[in-house]
Each structure stands twice: as structure tokens, then as C-alpha cells.
Length: 495
Image (cartoon, rainbow, N blue to C red):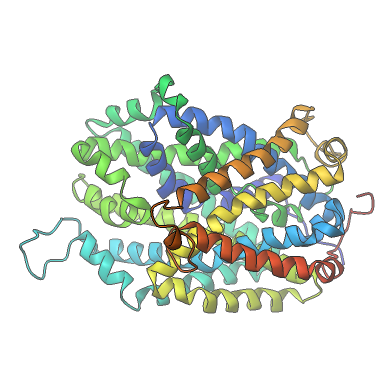
């Protein structure tokens, strides 16, 4: 049976952009940029767009288009049967993220509803007051209530609803969600830069301190942000690339996706930082250090509460977050669905199976914020290994052969030179360095026993133990996985 394909290049790119643009662009990028020097961070961030994101995006485009299967089948065909477990890791990590990403989308749905009904508190409570509900109390009450379970279920239902309709459903959703999202973010950014005092935010974001670039932390954070907000190395691009037309471009599309995604991040940075510097400049350090949840659900309502017409713009902000989360969630459901269909399971059954698993396995993160933070930490860092494995797959296939046959394939608008041969190998080095750095940061030398426990929101042990369990299982099943992940292989005969 021949795979369906995207109806046009525009439809494919909208779907790809929807996959890449998520909550990380809107709530994480502004915070990380502000915490790491603003303009200095942007320099390092652009460098790693070219050294990490684009090389991996090119790899995923080419591998998905060539193998016509998900990560397990693609790794088996292009990297050899011994790498099936690596493809399984890639698919598993993105699926594990799906199980708590639905919870994040649920939070955005709840706050959109509260913004529309005018029930989001925007004023901070007087500590001496009793019974007062401010943004912090509203968030704490929400997280400790049944609401997150309900909104998690709604989120998984919305994602399954789209993916059940196949590539045409994904196209239709992308045609609505992505233009709408871009218009919302653009409108919010324009409003932010027109606020009195917004110029300070622009100066901070776009004026690099060249001396600060000697700080390795800025570079490591910039690499991490690229890994987490472009979708490069997640396997999601590969899952959509299965639906590319045979003579579809890979190279120009990959560059467009990388720069398009990061442009949305930049607009989000302008939107948030200009608003912060204009309205609460004295609290800027406190705001950017609040964490993703604190910035989005505690500080953002306060900012909009002090802005003229802020109630309307708060609705637009949370609507943009819902659209960003939804478009990414669709891709996260499509990836494991593709893995199951590659193994011979009928598509509708595969979608419903993933939806059911997402509903059940997402419940712990919906009920306990500590579980959510643990899973976000473990599998977020796990994405670095995914990037490493993509690099290994290419090297096992033959770097130059992969580039000349699959990247510079028929229909490509641009020819990729031998620079890619160097940077795809450099991806492996970057993956090892960034993984080592994150694990080192999670070790407390004064309390090593606490650093190597299974259950913790942030330590090295919980990562290493959960990774070891998964990798041991995948290695043990490697032969079986390689045999049961054939995929459609519509154009893989020359692999």
C-alpha cells in the first residue's frame, strides 16, 4: 500500500512548523534568553541553529523521505539492524514526552478558559490578607485540584481527533493553527514594542555583550534551547517526512523550518521581554528566574493586569499557547502511531492505542507536579541522546553517501556541500558534552547519596536509572525490533 503524501509544499511546511513550534518557543525561550545575557545568548543560539538544529533537520527530512518509515524502521534500514534499538530510543523518548506534554496543553486550556471568563487573578495578594486569591494562589489551587486531569483528557482528545484523520487531518489542522498562531504572536509582539519603556527590552535582547560569550554556560544553554525548541532529533520531522512527495525538496525546506521556528521564538522573546521591561522593570530578574510555569501562569497574568487592555491580550496569549501546544501534540501522537503502523497495526487502532496510553500514562503527571517535573527532566535530557543516535546512524551508513544520495536527492532546490559531513559528526560531540554537563549540574558533591536516587525532580540518578532500564530493554529486544519495523519502504530499495 502506497503512503499518502502532503498535498503541497506549503501544506507540508505548515505541518512541519506546527510540529516545531510549541510551548518551549513561547514560555522557555524568553526566560532562557533573559537569564543568559539577552543579546549574548542570541549570538550563541544562532550558532547552534546551524551546528545542531539544521544538520539534524536535514538528516530527519532525508531519512524519513528515503525509508518511508518511523525511527525504528529508518534506523534499521539506514544504520543497520544493530541500530534498531537507537531508533526505538528516539521514538520512546518523544512518546514519553507526549505523556506529560498533554498535561502542559491542559494547563493552557484551563488558563484560556479562565482568561475568557475573566477569572484569572492579576493582582498579588497582601501577605496579611486572609482568603485572598492572587496568581500564585490560583495556580496552586489549580494544580492541587481535579482540573489538570480533566484538561489533560481534553488535550489528548483534541490530538487524537486530528491524527485519526490521517495526513489530510494533519494538513487541515496545520492550515488553521499555524497562520492563527503566527498572527497571535505577531499581534502580541507589536503590542509589546509599542508600550512605553519597551525599548529597554529590545536593547537588552538585541545588544550582545561580546565579553560574556567567554562564559561556557551561555553556549551550553543556547545548545539546549535549540535541541528543545526546534524539534530537531526528536524523530517528529522524520514521521512527517514519510508523507513527502518523491521529488520534494529537502534542503531548502530544512533551512526554512529551522529559521522559521526560531523566528517564532524571537517574536516570543520580544513579546515577553518588552512587556516585562515596560511594566515591571524592577522585577525583571525575579520574573525570568521564576521557571517556565512561574513565568507563564503566575507572572504573565500580573503583567497583563497592569497593561491597558490587558484582559484582551491575555486571552490572545493563552490562545496562542493552546495552538502551539496542540500543533506539537499532533506530531507527538503521529510519531508512535507511525511506529505501530510500521509494525503492521491498522492505523485507526494504532491512533486509539496511543491515545489510550497517553490518557492513562499522563495521569501521574497531571495529578502530581513532582512526577511531571521528574519526567520533564529525565526525557528532556534524553533528547540529547536522540541527537547522538541520529549522528551515529548517519556515520554507520556513510556520511558522504548519506549526503549525496538522500539529502541532495532529486527535487532538492539547494545542494548541501561537504560542510554537512563535518557538522553531523560534530553533533555527536555536542550531544556528549551537553548530556555530561546537565548530569554534572544535577550532582550535589556534598550529598552524593541524594544525587543518585530514582525519585527526584532534579538529580543525576533518576536520569541514569530510568535511561538504563529503557536502554537495557531496547538492546535485549533489538533483533525483534529490527524484524518487526519494516515500514512501507516505498523508496528504500537503494538504502
